[in-house]
Image (tube, rainbow over all chains, first blue to last red):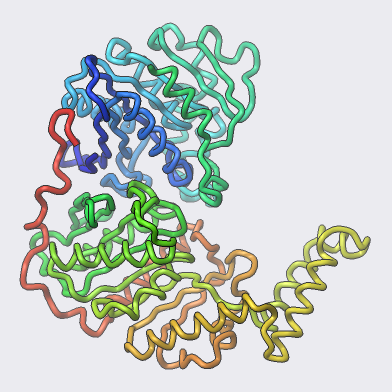
Length: 235
Length: 310
């Protein structure tokens, strides 16, 4: 396993790469896309555990932080949704280059799901399977632009324009189903979806703990049922 | 935008199983002899709540200080130790390995530790035992309750409408809590320990602070007004809770009334940052410079992995 920086000198991104634990005949790679803000902090342990399970299952796994988040360069508030999609594309290239994989699997949690979906619509042939874990609804996406939920003044106006929110929000996914990879799974853990919410997309509900809430940090517990479902589905 | 730093992802420790980020000053800037190590808050990974430690580390690097944020074993990206140390011992061992790496790789021998909550406790436990540690920044460290704390606490609870309703109706936990707190308050007033646990904690804290004092460690303590229940409720609580420690004239104490425990407000984070940067800038030995430029030690850490390799 290696932690390292990648990307251009103007946009250095922090990544954590773990190679598959065993030799498998087929190279399989997975890119994990984090939430942002404190959801990133609260879910970090869960995402690390997901990576560990995928590595044991034979995937080369890259986790990374978007520009202006986590350990990547850039100040908090410097990033925006469109450029973070660009970061995912950079990470896909990095992962393909490191592993020799022709395609990668994408798994995004919360905002990472919204961003992954947007990227997948642009590069469907490069994405083997796509997991969208509890993508943000429009109002949550708006709040995610704040960088600090308690203070509206902190919000980054570039993130919360209605056109941008609508294009990335959970509610927009059903309309984009035809553009997403055939193997796309929406995974929900807080409550079952309404019947028509995701249109033709495959949806599964796993009653499990929410990985991105502060309680995860207090208890240290991991939503293991959800993680195992993700690994099984990507196999 | 934070400018004037570069960062290096580092694997270190006995089996290179600990992960940290070293923020380095720009190459044109002389490196201060005084380095800074920022500790995890509980099990939140090295960026801290609201990414506060990233900004702090980069600002410190911009001032010329090597600054290291790392994850204790089992937290963030660091693997569990795989030995039989209890959590307190493991934290101390991890911290020693972090300082060893800084010494070996960057010629660092003078360090300030920064920790919030559990991180502050780890810093306080460790600081006096390692001669490389010359200062501590303790954010919301554990402070034993005092009679005045209980008076504040109960008063605040009773001013809340829901608590009043429960109080008036005799329902809910407020009655039980009031009784418990009153018993404890009476214990504190009479200088008797409320419980054996309280007494043990008080004695242990007192000893740790006295050891730090005897080592002449410089100490900055920052308390928040919005700390979690059961912590401090006023600025002087630390002095009153541990009367045998000569805090006054030794530590710098700041009380940020409007800040909560994790510095949710950006304004309060900026205040904290300003406090810490100012305190470190005024550090007595900070003008001493390292003879070498850290960054000559980059390989093999932080390099892009080879194909399929770790």
